Length: 538
Image 1: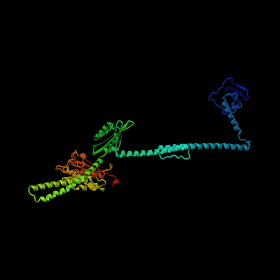
Image 2: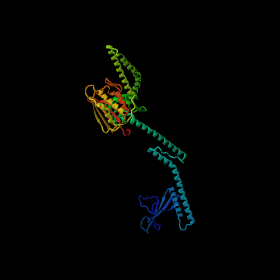
Image 3: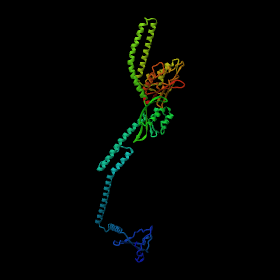
Image 4: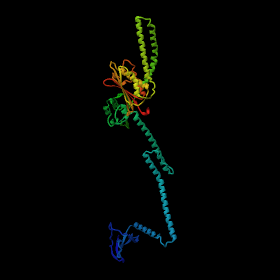
């Protein structure tokens, strides 16, 4: 304040401030409950005066009090604002109802107030409606975006009663949602295809740029006879061959191909696994983008069955030609030799008789041998269709091998599991397999010792297979041919066509089974047959 004076209740000055002295009120001082009122305002000098009584500064009633008068110099704008406040205060006082106000004035003021209130409410409703029309499409787009983020690609936003720009925006959003859905479906289909391939078809090994294994699928374990293949993830391929020495040729070949940096390569390799001999098709490629190496991939597929099928088809074609080119002339040769014997054996004597008898016998024996060979070859190439029915495997074994057990120099030992379930088998075909295997065992004993054949059956529910094993104490398979024992004409015997084991394998494969051959210590051979079993297939 620029001037302050203190007066008593009689308005006599008790004290006043000096001229050109500014008075300042200290902060945090208690204020009166009753605010001071303005006495005058002077717009020309920008001054205004306020007065306050000290009786409002105490809570107790008092008769003795003083008045404080202060004059302030202020900004013109503040002074104008104070004038507006005072005018509004006077207007409010003017519209107060009292007993002297006429009914017409009361009605007018009531109607006016109602009209103003309704107008304000109407304006607010219109504003809220406009805001809703503007924000609802944006809200719908936001909700739809969240649904798409959650994986719901069927969501669409309706564009009715919207502005042209908003309809265009919503239309583009819906089109984007449709494209995302189509892309997602295509990606899911592609992923399912890849997962199916990785799970069932091919063995895949994925390597990083340092040739450490980053991916190895379960098919690799089945193809390469590797247990717990996932334990090798993070290491080099050498770790696999260190634990499985028979795989060294495979990974050495892959290492050499990658070092040549030939990009893509394809090779076939034969491996002898612990339980079988396989032919593998191996393919590899370097993975890179924009000239930057990312890693390598090795794809392995067991083509043993395919290779056997191709060989069988080729042998079948040869068998047809042999039947036409060889077997047909055998009949007249045989008849001619028999006719010579009938004509000259009774007329010739001495040395001539001996020559005719010996030569015609040789011709007849060789013709019969060639005819048997061609017939056996035809049987191998044209294996008859089988008729599978639920069959008790143990009973079929006893029935098929019973005649051999009666021979004096052959002893059959049975160890047949009682829990072996019925299998879908062709009884004639499996009986032929059993007879051929016992016959091969009997022919493998070259000395005078007795032959012992052990027949064992097992049911392995955890693997879903029934296993049949036949082991003997013969001389076993020759190491030179054991890897190709199921191929046609692979034999070390003086007698025989070399087709017995090939025919056995054909019959087992017709039953969707597997067959393995090997030697046992100290001497002898073992043939193992595995049939798949599921309750749904019987």
